[in-house]
Length: 125
Image (cartoon, rainbow, N blue to C red; front, top):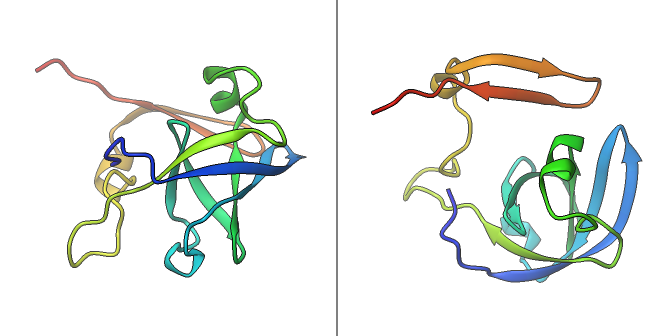
């Protein structure tokens, strides 16, 4: 879960095709406080940190994400609004992350060599 408050502006340093796109994003975050597997909202798209350094982190952007977001957003030199996920007090898990209870609430899972697309089970209230 995110607050909607932008906490940094990231700059895409590199884009590498690895099936999906691997982006290296420069930022001002204290990367010692960012775990591998953490969620960071990048201009509204929730992405997972797969690698990191002193002043950068890397994420994989699926073709599904690229196709559903602003054209040209995921290019070298591009600027991204960054926001870290909220944490529950006393818990190391970011809010809104898939859990064993939510993982079973899908109608289908589509896979390709690099990604999984989960189709959620939705109900009317």
